[in-house]
Image: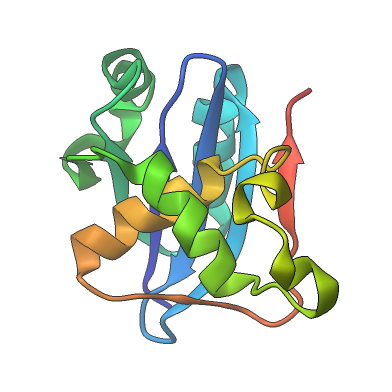
Length: 145
């Protein structure tokens, strides 16, 4: 399989998605503590056939890129301007509101959502110029231990 990792870097937490490129599906979407990022990527790289790692050039990207130097030339740095703002819109494309919730302002429904994984997805979708779908039964996890 041909898989890509996309990272929305941050000072305290990072969004990360793992995508199966031929299937055009997101296999994993998580938010993890920034200090766990290098080891998590190493473990993924060891268990999956990762061809490239895409990382946004935003907040603290320079420090995160230095920690991911083991990836070498397979690390691609891309523009991530407005991805968090766009993640709010993408959230409702993936998880449309139903029933009475559809009458509430959308801003209320995402106040407590952690959108870093969706920002990582948008970074990847911009890079690939394609929208990805979620694999069946995917759980968007937040790991902030």
